[in-house]
Length: 400
Image (tube, rainbow, N blue to C red; front, top):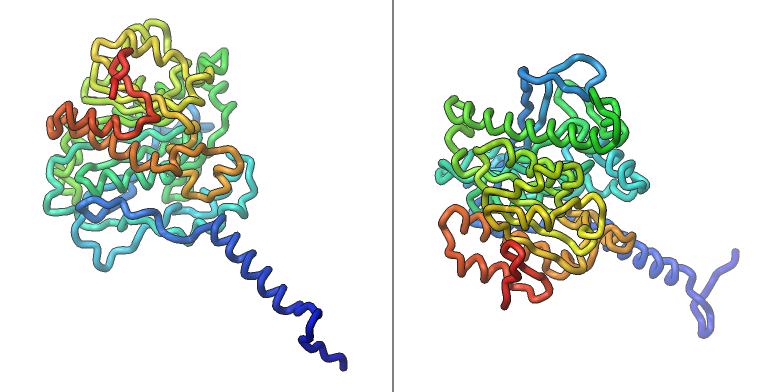
């Protein structure tokens, strides 16, 4: 038997191994955190219901078989009592969503396995707050091919402050949409070429965005019917205070929807994709209050379209923010997935430097201003909290 003793000048292999193991665990804990999504900080707890809808008036042109257009919607709302209710996981179908994210971002699925341990602040089927009557509604259309859960943090922020947020899971627009019967719809970029009458990729994208804009109008119709029912959520929606919010492709969707649905009172978009809108649509501009947030990266990309031209043509001047040190995917919580998102070039520095909470405050302040609960001065104050963000009303910069 050989016995290794600790003497001067010798190396303790066990100690080194232990130190290396601890360092490795520390690195893994940093790169793959398993805490919960940050507390939204509002007055209310947050409830969440996931509901499946079927629009029997429309056939789904994406489907391989003749079927009507089906949707999944995620509804966040203010709640008071959450005892006995289970926190929602970040991703309902963990393996399915993880594989889809990995495929669409060209990353190995193992990088996302820790997400099954991440907790949210939303309680499944919590009873709505006693105050949850006739609340303003934000309908969210995610980026393409993002998924609604990547906007959890924003939804919880708004719901904890007295809003209802409805995330629309668009089949074939989201990375994946799964229904309770096991049916799944997966994103395929080239699938738009199979739509009826399509000759170019741009034609297909345009038809796809118009289809998803119709999804939003269908959801608004459904909300009006729900308010007249005996459903637990009946009466919490004020459809006269209804706003749409979209990111990237979803930004294009909400702009299309606002052109054709007069029930949309205000418009929010983050790096909207307007490249398939016609000259006539761009020249119509925006006729309702709007807030357009644009990263430095986005304004140089072809998909951005003619945001400045639309702003110039708008009868109601949009508020327009130009955000430095941010990247197009930043609004989709990629920094919450892992610091690797930044190191791999997916995200910028802005969101890590307090930018996320700043944008949420600005959006909240904008809506409160639109609904008459904040003065113009108060909204300006929220907009101008960061000196590195250029802020415009129409084409005129708001000076500090």
